[in-house]
Length: 371
Image (cartoon, rainbow, N blue to C red):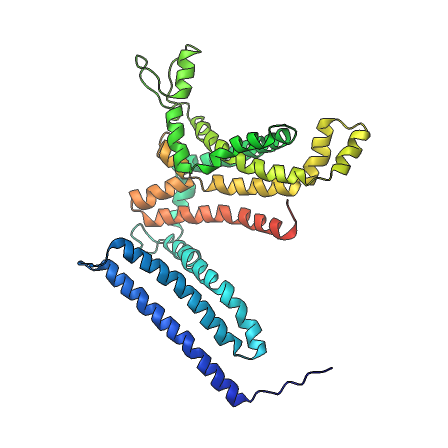
């Protein structure tokens, strides 16, 4: 049975739309007034309101204002024609995220690219001179070499360790306990991990007790001499820093690989065992192809981590002793030397290096189910 719908007159529709716009406009005005009020209250020299009250007021006003803005905007769009409602309504949900993304990432990226073609004071246009310096300076070549070491060895050892532990833990009676212990370092920040491993690598003079775990082992058990592990043995001292990220990220890789392994059909594994396949053949010919998507995703994620590594290096060595990486060199040029042009050029190179890996990772997520 067909239901007849009376067409709405255009005049009444326009009037209803205009009336629906009033709550939206009022909510924007009220939110703007509240924002400036709280800002002035915060910056006032003689603020009669306690700090905690101001913070709570800002939180309540911000959260409540977002909810109010959403409902009024959604109400306004629902008054439009069906065609425009379907076009604009998704923007209510993704619009704020897109605006925040543009404000926090896209606009700064564009400004950084522009400043990379200017001098150190961002006043005079110098063309590609900053990029020529970055790509030819001997110190920067050492920085790129270090990032390559991080990217290759950090990724290979993290992925292989996580995969090995996931396979072994999957057959253990103490699987949950083992995974919890391996995953525990993930709860530690990179800065915290750097502080912990500073104690591990700590060195004292020969005539003093060694508080560093590694030097205590070398001196007490092996009878050797204490060493400054992160300062000497260049460029091999970078590996003592790479170990920290392997320690942190192995738990992340293990959890994803464990979930992927449990998704491998048991019928295939049992059939292969009946046909006489060894455990190594099961691993390389059945498990690896089945979880290849997860391996690629984890590997690209670790590559991104190692390309952007900053915290561990700045805490452990400050980028000294030929351990500087792209992010620490950017920090040094931009904030220590106040060289905006070279610092921006380094940031652009880092962005160019990370973007293809991120694009490939996102394409993998979109094209296949990796878990």
